[in-house]
Figure 1: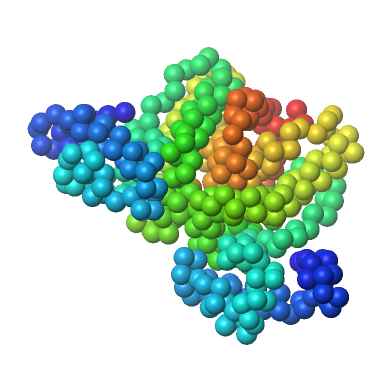
Figure 2 (figure 1 turned 90 degrees about the vertical axis):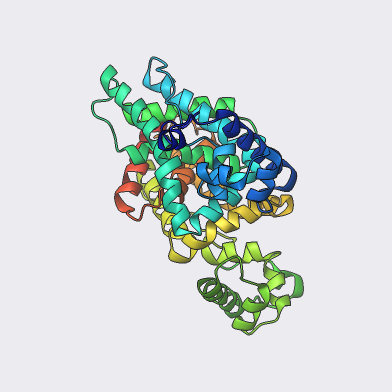
Length: 197
Length: 197
């Protein structure tokens, strides 16, 4: 979860992971109390007991901080090899469902996405950090399946990515479904069938 | 596109489809000028040359009016039978890509979704009207495939719906992709494979 080589590498002193954790926890608390629209970086700094500069060294914008606190950090671990393409897909889908579907993310992500897509700078930054990291995880899952001989050649990465994260988003935010286990299993099985046929 | 049996059925006079069309056109004009957040029902009424009451007889909220003007009306036609499950899927995906991907919808849908998900009343209404209509189209496509013998039995309707609309949403709004033809064709082919295997 710790970003490597950022502030610490520049200043020569180690990154304080307690400060990282307090900022993320404070963001979640303030979100739960005031909601995303009324959350300010000042309120988070006060709650975390840090200066605003400590926040802006880590996150360029309020949106980036909120995304890191609710969905996933700027480093996202690739899930461990689960042994097969369909099991890897299921693990990745479980992970995305758990993060997008946590109670704070459920009430935060649509407003966050609206802000991000309304601003070209935020959009570019969001794609370079969070979307790219998630895409790297999908790529690793495809590469493993090719190495195992389950896929002849890797299919279009962005198509797989869209077919993996899009249905989770629709399930949670368009359909408002709370039940998740059977959905995750069926989506993984259908995707495995779609790409290995 | 005309809603049947609404105002006309209650009042005994025919629904004025020119008023319908002016309201939708005025909504798109005001959206293009001011954006979704600053759009008001007053501004749309003034632009369309109608009273606010004429708008509220048709749409309960600003959000509903904007959705109807940008994505699809409250009646959505089921696409004509294209002859096969994969061709029906391709037609439906083309349709969803064209509507969600039109220039006004691209800058409107994320803010609209944020407002809708932040309010339980709007959420319920949105699901009962727009999501249900789209779901009916997906159901018709599945029923046709069962009748043709392409599917043994219809798969879970909501899973198919999420796997159809979710990737389109992710492609346009998360990845910001402008290219569409190859994506629509591949998504249709992958979904047909996923469900007919």
